[in-house]
Image (cartoon, rainbow, N blue to C red):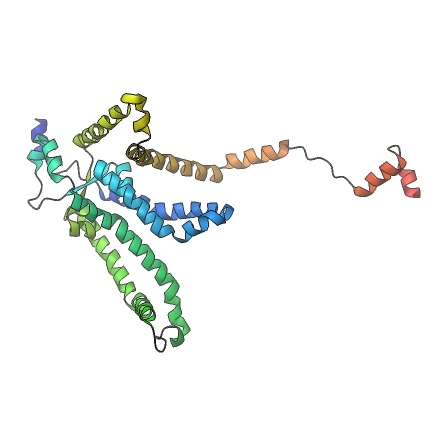
Length: 325
């Protein structure tokens, strides 16, 4: 009976809501500025070592997250922040939904819809490449767009230009004249796909996912079993011969453990951030700081003139003698 009710139900239990997808995208968009802010604070203390890293933050962030997202796509079927929300990516069939096969043989359906190596690289281009390109274009637009208000001396091509100057001139012209329209079309396309996904008129909530033929789904029971089975042999092997010493320092094992620990670090950092926001916004922190300030005993000030007089005439010097002096 449960099989028939699930088969006849129009609701798809594995389809995430639009609000889940928007929350995941917002969390993913908050990671670069947060890490940049922390790196900026650390650079003020150690500028000699961290200034070059801060200047190349976008490139280093893109390369590091390329490795992280590739690991999570291969092992968990979804991105780093997508795994935090229990989401995954899978290939979209052209024949539509297959509820009978999904309920009767979920393991076979999961294997058929699993991302291949080519699909993983396509998703990496969407997850890492497009946001990196978008950030660089936005930064360049904010820098070069105000130059158009300064007159033609700042926008015209210099006489006898080199190849690099020509490329820079045409790039700045693109930012001033074409990029605003491209940026508006980008957000408008995302809005159209979001509305269509909200009313079940599309299986994609993003136009780039539609281009690569990938859709977002919730992790199911078979997905969690496959993830646990993927990590189980490696853990047993690490506990094998030589008390696991050689396998413990294996670069592959260490890399997988470090990347796997990030899914614990993310909710912990979010909890710490929310706790700090509550702490600084609450009256409890102010009252506690006042009590601590009241409990501190401040020593009385020492007047230099009186100290010299006491050393010269002794500690039993009275006010009358001080007046006479």
